[in-house]
Length: 89
Image (tube, rainbow, N blue to C red; front, side, top):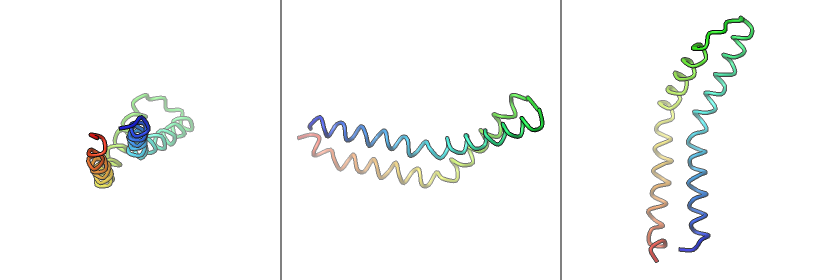
C-alpha cells in the first residue's frame, strides 16, 4: 500500500465525517440563530432557552435522517472492505 493510498483513505474518511455531521450542525446553527434573534427582540436572557430547542431539533433531525446516515456509513464501510485485498499486498 502506497502513501497515496493511505492519504486517499484518510481524506475519504474525513469527508465522510464532514458529510455526516453537517445536517445536525446546520440545524443547530439555524435554531441557534432564530433563538438568538428571538432573545434579542424580546430581551429575554434565559441561558437554557438556547440549549433545549437546539437539543430537540438536532435529535429530531438525526431521527429523520438516520436511514440516510446508515446507508452512507454502510456504503463507505463496504468500500473500505473492498479495498482490503489492495491494502494487504
